[in-house]
Length: 93
Picture (cartoon, helix red, strand yellow):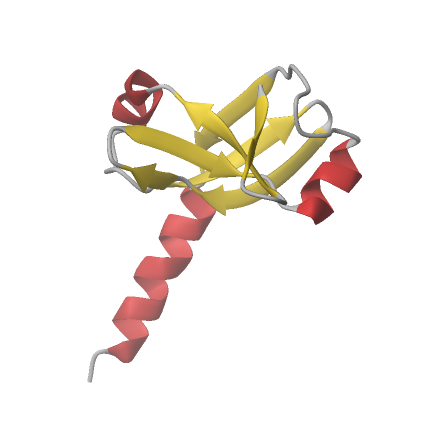
């Protein structure tokens, strides 16, 4: 379910076992699929809970709203990880 957090912030709770299966820590970069709409983000860790943020822009593009029951796909964003590693190597003298 797309949950409202505060006045405008929305997010999707991700079960801890899904985060564990991704195998890259508590705040992985992921690709999220809401129907046919796919976007990149980072999982937020709030204590024992994990959330995927869904901005107003993404809600509009996916045609979803707070309170909607959704089928959500989530996978590790390997491109983001590869780019981060490349940026780190470039910073080194």
